Length: 187
Image 1: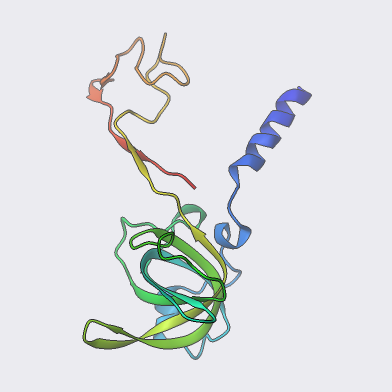
Image 2 (image 1 turned 60 degrees about the vertical axis):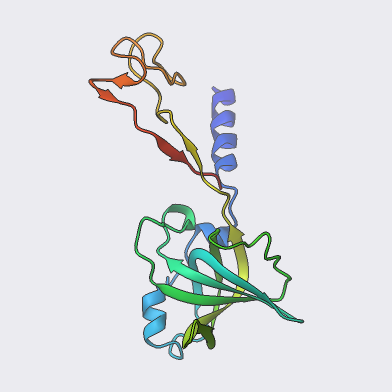
């Protein structure tokens, strides 16, 4: 019994490899839409926002990432199935390599809202919220699997870990239907 408890405990701790600032929202979770309505009112407020990288600008003393904002899903991961909400700029004192922080990579940032900054997008100048980064998390790319991601079918040969059905059907048939392809997510 002790071995089972130890295994479960180790398994649960291994599941959480994200920085706490990314995994958990701040006590007052300021949304991008709220901050955009009045940036000066929420100056110095903690934020946790994410989306996809648009571009990286490296200056002599800091780096700035322009991010296309998406709502955050579980564990602070940007949910690209939802509609994008706008843009914001993240300022970091560290050098952020544009080859690593490349266009369209998923990113989540925890930091403090500093105010706004002006950026030129095409021929239009926009004021975007500026966040001073405390923690930046770049999400690993998703990969596609054509196989069903569950535990397989029921019955013999379809128990835990078997992707090819069992007594009630076998791949690609499952209870009268087909297995659906799904995406694996890496942290």
